[in-house]
Image 1 (cartoon, rainbow, N blue to C red):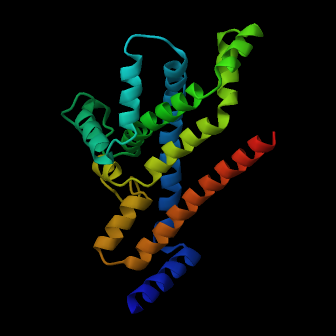
Image 2 (spheres, rainbow, N blue to C red):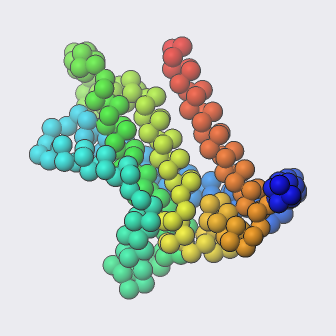
Image 3 (cartoon, rainbow, N blue to C red):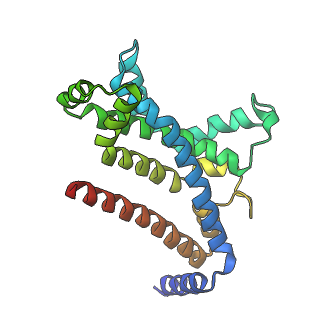
Length: 232
């Protein structure tokens, strides 16, 4: 028990004083995960809409692939990105390995299948009559897609939030492609793992509390949007 109380006291001291660059690490985490979630949304939302509304050969296989991708182990994503961005790899000339950009690529690879799968499921769950009604209004393709996405906005937001949750809490991919470099690629999860290995449980707890606060803030946003949509 003494160890727990000591760790909690140290965590409180770090959170109140900001020592140990914990808030710089938190800001870096927010920027990197925000960018990777944005990339996943920009790629995943159109793909999800296309899968749900389109008719093309291999559609069922694509849906199955997206569903399988929701369970992609982060270390597998990290391995694929590492091989691709390694100095002797296909894109090694870009010099992205062990940079924040490499973490964004790896995390986007993790989050995109989640966004695609949830978006496609949300759109497929809409009543078929809704599609006929929108078409009967004379809506062109861009407006049709916009109205469909608007009707499924809450599940689509859930898809984006789920993508964010999958990357903000992962460790393996960030460690593999980023290298956990101090002041450059160290994020909350990799920093917490490092501090535990050093026996600095107070610092690890402080980092964990910040991570939980970030996830909690996302949950509050999602809940607020859901409540507003219910009242609309």
